[in-house]
Image 1: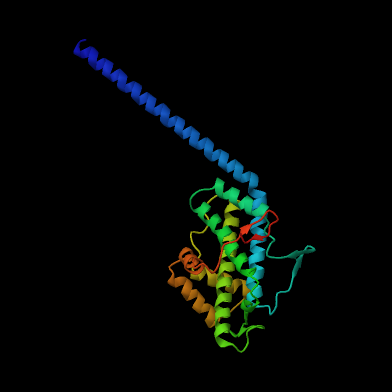
Image 2 (image 1 turned 120 degrees about the horizontal axis):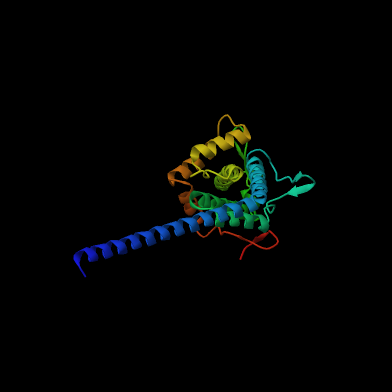
Length: 256
């Protein structure tokens, strides 16, 4: 084979390689586009139920925030003839959020995961049957309790527990609200984080507070000292005294 023939053959091989690489890249791009379209279509299919689920979650979170800060007891709330309770996010709705997580990616997936984690932690604590932790903060900043009055140390503990629960429910509310905006527009991302300022803004807007009680500010400082929501959760809930509950098929909490 002459040198010219060898060069021609080499160029032909290189062109074939380039052509194959181009075809492979185009195939990968097509498959990626098809996968993204399939994911978007599937997310659109669950969108109506996802919107209803997130809206209901916000209502329940707001109710619990107001119960802790405003009400002296735990009165039942009736909406459309149905009692609104802690088990009003049944397994079917949790599964629909899980489906959205599966179909989503990046920060969206993480934020939706946080919704479920936040809700499970908060609902688990509310159902621990410990009546002594039921306290409230009045608008003048005084802590009140019908079960531990006169016992200052226990009262302080109960008050801090209550503040932590309020923060948890505000986190649930804020993330659900952000996720609701994402689900409605099907674009953008859910909020990256829920920081101290977000908690304060949500609470003051929901409860119409001019100033926050000192006890609650201490709890917020504790949140900030951990450096973020995720670290705060690990610090508060990885001690073994609070267990994450799992949902049973009837929508109630399974302690197993």
